[in-house]
Length: 307
Ligand code: NAD
Image 1 (cartoon, rainbow, N blue to C red):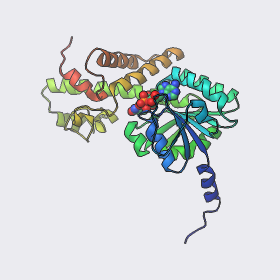
Image 2: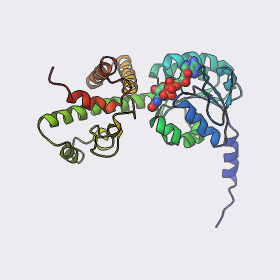
Image 3: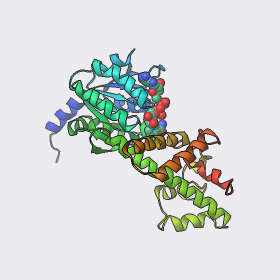
Image 4: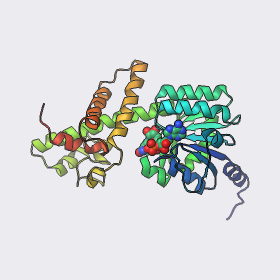
C-alpha cells in the first residue's frame, strides 16, 4: 500500500533548501559539487584556478560563495591552504552554518580550524574521503567524519549524495586520524605484498599460485585480494592497466607523511609507517613512481637485488 511521505517529504524539502558553498573545484571537488547540484542543491563554487562544475554557480571569492551557505564544503590540497581559506571563510559564514572539510590534511590543522569555526558560532566537521576520483564522480565515496553529532547529522544528507558510506569517528580531527591510520596500514601492506611477489618470482613460484595461496591464507589483505599489484592476477586493478592510477604513489606519499607527522606529535612508535614513508619518498622523488599507481612498487622491487 502506498503511504503518504508526510514528515519525510517535509524533511527532504528542508534538506534540498540547504544552500551549499563549495571551495576547491579540483579533481575531487568538481565532481562532488556537480553531484550535489544534480541532486537539486543550490551550489555556489569557488576555485582560484577558475575551475567550475556542471550545474553550479561560480562566485568571485571564497567569502562570497560562503556568505549565504548553510554548509560550506572545502576540498583543498593541504592543511596550510585549509587554514588560510578558513581565515577567509569563517568570518563570512552565517551563524550556525557548518564548515565541512573533506580534504586530507594533518590532524592539527583539522582541529585548529574546527576550534576557530566553533569559536565563531559555527559547526565544523572534518570528513576526508576514500574512493578517489572514480568515487567522487560516481557518488560512491566513503567519508570518515570528526566533529559534533549535530554537525554530522546536518551534513549526512550531503554524504548520502556524494558517497555510499559515512562513519562518525569521534570529535574534531577523528576523521583525519582514521584516514591516515588506514592509509598507513595500506602503504605498509602494499609494500609487503609487492616485495613478497618479487621474492616469489626469484624463488620460481608462479604469480597465480602465489595469489591462490596468499589470498586464502593468513597473508591476505586488501592489497593482495582486491587490488593485486601483479598484472593478470586477481581482480582487475591498476596493474592490469600499466599501473595508471588508481591511487597515485604521490598521494600515498602525502598520506604517509601526514601519519608520521601525527605519530611524532602524539609520541607514537610507528616503525613500519616510517619505513613505508621512506620507500614511497624514494620511489616518487628519485625513481619513476611519480604519476604511477602506488602498486607500481612491484615492478620497482622486481628490478632490484639486495642492495
Ligand atoms: P586538486 O589539486 O585537483 O584540487 C585542489 C583544488 O584546490 C585545486 O583546483 C586548486 O586550485 C584549489 N585551491 C588551491 N588553493 C586554493 C585556495 N586558496 N582557495 C580555494 N581553492 C584552492 O586535488 P584533488 O585531487 O581534488 O584532492 C583534493 C583533496 O582530496 C586533497 O586533500 C587530497 O589529498 C584528497 N584526496 C584526493 C584523492 C584523489 O584520488 N585525487 C583521493 C582521496 C582524497
